[in-house]
Amino acid sequence: MALERTFSIIKPDATRRNLTGKINAKFEEAGLRIIAQKRIQMTKAQAGTFYAVHAERPFYDELCTFMSSAPVVVQVLEGEGAIAKNREIMGATNPADAAPGTIRAEFAESVGENSVHGSDAPETAAEEIAYFFAGLELVG
Ligand code: UDP
Ligand code: MG
Image 1 (cartoon, helix red, strand yellow):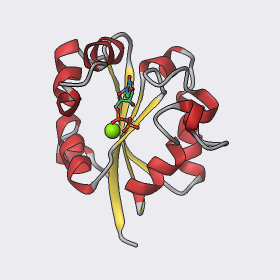
Image 2: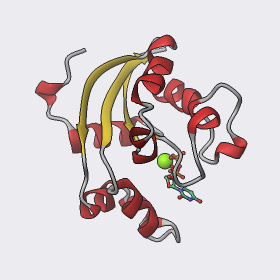
Image 3: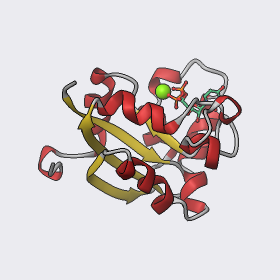
Image 4: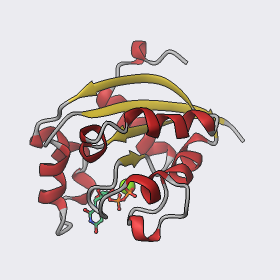
């Protein structure tokens, strides 16, 4: 398996509950390295651009309002097969379907307020990393 980079967000429901450390412990324990990280608060427009792929979905407006409602931690994770590994550690989108021990099973509040984002493919990982970080900020 190749060394990969993927993009991760700790969402507002999790930063509000002070869960940044507990969530990142799961990534680090699974062998993913946090090679870039910052705490920001997005505007609704910035969240809208990030989630543009979902613009036609019924939950889009609520999602953008939520994602801009409080600070988030945006970060880049690096490791062998990092894109799939991150999705595995996160668990299913709906916490009711998430496997025991996953971040969403343990921490998510609902299908919308589900604590973490993770890229779903190499192309989206590259796009999402570039939306938030300059090349010089990635120090693997
Ligand atoms: N979402 C939602 N309602 C839904 C499906 C998704 O509010 O029925 C939100 C949720 O926060 C999710 C995000 O939209 O994480 C992006 O959806 P996607 O299907 O890409 O799920 P993910 O890749 O985050 O598991
Ligand atoms: Mg997705």
